[in-house]
Length: 348
Image (cartoon, rainbow, N blue to C red; front, side, top):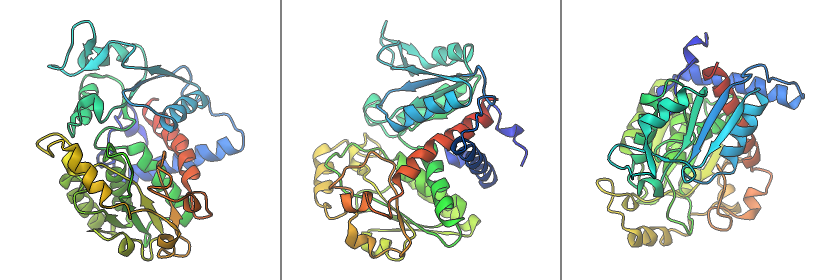
C-alpha cells in the first residue's frame, strides 16, 4: 500500500490503524530486522531527526529500543525525565514553578524535533483509569509532530506490534492461531491494563482465534472488549472470555500469561481504589501461574510470550520462561524493529 498516509500520523492505539496499515508496518519491520541482522546500515531513513521521549514511569526495553532505533535510523533520541523538567500537566493539575501545561510543552517541542514519545500510567495520574491516555491525547491535540504512545493506562501499541510480529514469525500468519491472553498472579497489584488490552486488540484485528482468560474481578475495559468482538467478526477470527485458565490453554498456539490490576484498584467511576480488596482478589488466585503442567495443555508447538519484566515464580516458572517454548527475547528484540518501522513511516 502507499505509505504517504503514515507521514505525521500519531501512534496512540492500534484501534486507529487498519489491518492493511498494520501489515505494512510488520513488513517494514521485517525488512529492517533483516538489514540489521546482515549488518546493513539504514541511517539514511531519518538523518538528523529528533525524537523527544518523556518517561513518567521507569523503563528498560522501551527506552533502550527507542534510543537504539533512532540511532540506527540516523536520528537521535532525547530522554526527558518529568521530574527534571517542568512536568507536563493538564489544565487544572498545574503547580506553580513545578509544572508546565501540556499545550505549551507540546508546541515548544514541535518547533525543535520531529516526534514526541510518552510513557505514563498509574501513580502519575493517581490510578484514574484513562487519565494517562487523556494526557497523551492532549499532547497529540497541540503537537504539530507525531505523538507516539510508549504505554499509557489503556494501550501499549508498540508492545502489541512486537507480539504479533513474533506470532507471524513463528507461525507464518494468524488464521487458525489460538491466541490466549491470560491473567497471572503477581505479588504486586499495581499493574496497568495496557498490555492485555493491546494484545487482544492486535490478535482480533489480525484474525486470530483470541481468548481472554482471567479470574472474576479482573475484567478489562468494556469498550475494548466490544471492539475486539467487532474486529474478530470482521477479520474472520473469533473472540471469547473465560474465567478458567486451564480451559483457555487447551490447544493454544500462543499463551501470554501476565498480571494486571483488578477493576477495584482504579479510581471512581471505574473502581473505588480499594487496595485491600485488590490484594484479596490477587491472593485468592495464586494458582494462576504458567508452569510446565499448564504448558502441556497447549498445542505441542505452542509458544510462551510475555512483555517483560515478568515476576518469576509467580506469573511463570523458570522452567517455562527459560525453556524451549519461550519466545520472550525474540518478542523483546522485535520491539526495536516495529518501533523503527513506525518511526521511519511517520517521522519522514
